[in-house]
Amino acid sequence: MAHEMRPLFGIPQTASSNTSTSNTDPTDRRINALVRHLVEPSSSAMADSISASPTSSLNTDSVFAHVVRAPEDPILGVTVAYNKDPSPNKLNLGVGAYRTEEGKPLVLNVVRKAEHQLVNDSSRVKEYLPIVGLAEFNKQSAKLIFGADSPAILENRVTTVQCLSGTGSLRVGSEFLARHYHERLIYIPLPTWGNHPKVFNLAGLSVKTYRYYDPSTRGLDFQGLLEDLGSAPSGAIVLLHACAHNPTGVDPTLEQWDQIRKLMRSKQLLPFFDSAYQGFASGSLDKDAQPVRLFVADGGECFVAQSYAKNLGLYGERVGALSIVCKNADVASRVESQLKLVIRPMYSSPPIHGASIVATVLKDRDLFNEWTVELKAMADRIISMRQQLFDALRARGTPGDWSHIIKQIGMFTFTGLNSEQVSFMTKEYHIYMTSDGRISMAGLSSRTVPHLADAIHAAVTRVL
Image: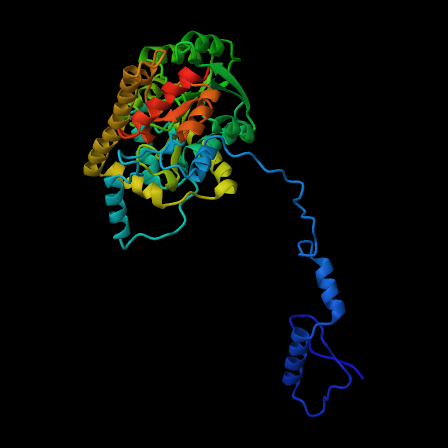
């Protein structure tokens, strides 16, 4: 006759009637029952367990069978294609990451020194950062972009939060605007970085474009820009590239920037700067920050997203900051409280290592000065690549005016090549770039300039 045994993990177990109970210790009986349960499962139990599993190997249809394969990211996909190419002459000019003259990634000396200090500081711990990030990093980042003597900083009208590089800063800022700003329309330049519309759309903003690049001159369509912003509804948000416009490399002059500022303030348009290349464009941190500082000096409000991927080479550390300049300190404090509510469910708090590197470099006078030298060296090498490519095309008698290569600034050049010419260069010369003809000047070297010049010459003479 069967009898009830003491439950195991809350599940009643039943022993069969032919099990002796008179001479067996209760503990032994429970162990024996458990062994039989694990070693000799019944066929019905096995069948039940198989049929209950939706991901069983016997199930041929996945619950995700309807998911279609997404296309490669148009920029990162260039590197995917490049990596698959076995040609020894292949050249990747797609992704915006600095390379040395030898074509190698660069870790700045100041970064290595800062990391050495951090690693050898036994007092450092790996505790969570506050939601807004590392306080010293935020303080130094605001000073870097606005200037240490900025009235906005001195009056506590700036709130700065650490974010996940430039992309994360844009996303946090746009999420805040979608929740707390009366206008959900943002104007972005045409063209712009491919991730901009995706970030803003997913945050809940509506995206429109304003004219920026003139293909006929391969320069700025300043009149079109003024007309489009002039017709924008009052209060609309406007994305502005602080310097080294991506992808065109075309920037307004300081005088043109001031005209843009006056127009935007008269229309009560809200500036949202994307500062991904401070110091990397001209080689001067202060010069590249001038457009932002113009807008802050008039006392108006604005947003600034910063990235340390390019100017400190911290690509994979994902270090950035979002600063919001407000009318007064009380508003800035309340804005920060709401930014915390945006960040907390998004990624809780930011990582500590990259921000600690930045803070160490920015607050140490010697390291900061060394950084400015290294930064200028990177910028100067890119400027040199522009000149070498221009000279190589002129020496070959390549049809067209290529002076835009040396007039544009920053990491990228908008060559003016069409998608058919780009495809030709990839197929025939194993040169990889985005289909709009944007090339990363930082990916060039004195050794590879002739190869690129040959490819461009062939493309424009053989492909219309």
